[in-house]
Length: 342
Ligand SMILES: [Zn+2]
Ligand SMILES: [Zn+2]
Image (cartoon, rainbow, N blue to C red):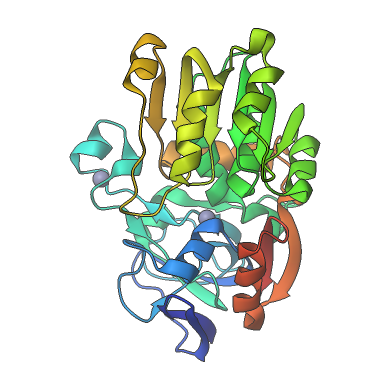
């Protein structure tokens, strides 16, 4: 089969590799649609500390397709079923799994290889995070499951009440999902990004106000001005992953507000926090990573029911052979994310 292999940062090659075979508890999926993701773009540019087990590594993690073959003992999964899977599953044995924090599982099993014709879904993911796609939901739309599960995780862990004001920094795929989900929760949302195109999508998804983070624009002041008496928003969510923006988030929130830091910043970076601000303003800072089987389930239901419309998130379709060009377009922030069709 044809597959994209990750050799090193900026070295991803299309190759002929053996089509994998499903072992016990596993299913082989013929990929109908994969999606580029911000994580793929970051991995392509600078590598990834934990994602790749071997080099060269299969690449890509958002996909949907049809079951081609099943291994022994896979329960009710059968060839021909249309399915979507999340890109990981927890062990359910470690301390963090036992206390219900599965995104911090010590043995999280990741799946790479969505940018290929076929992929074997390991048994742990089959058991916990594989779903049959209902009729009427396209493969490319279902493939949005994993990033949406991440955004759902961020939103369910952040106290957002009816009528709250929420600032979302970043209008990439995850930021836009936060815009949509916070709006769904009854909040009024303001979104900050550099790209006017992306901000237009944010408005389509429910943002009441948008701010273009152009050079010379004081985005902190702009967010505060939008709130009553300039007190700042009840909640700020950072969905870019830049230390400078993490710091800005702390200045946009009101006293007693909540700051959720979702964007993964480069390793080795740190931020400065004004101790007086943190103490006297009683600000809560929260880091959120990845998803859990519960938030994957919730994301699946939001997609299945149409409560989240995947259409605005997918900016174009590219053939598998063009994966590198698609990642580069995504990296240049042309559009939100791309569908890859093998
Ligand atoms: Zn992703
Ligand atoms: Zn675990």
